[in-house]
Image (cartoon, rainbow, N blue to C red):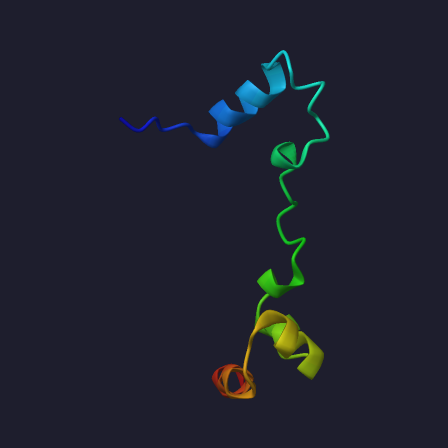
Length: 71
């Protein structure tokens, strides 16, 4: 049987767990900030340079399609 746990329930468990202070710096407790990965910023970032395209796995053709759709 699977147990469904909401994000708010997870935060309550983390906040009130007796071991949370001991493990507060452990990697499994760290939730990255939304948008901290620039590749999630969208085509305006991806297509700004070839370096960004490579970093985010976007092709020149995809950037051209984006440009054609916008303008």
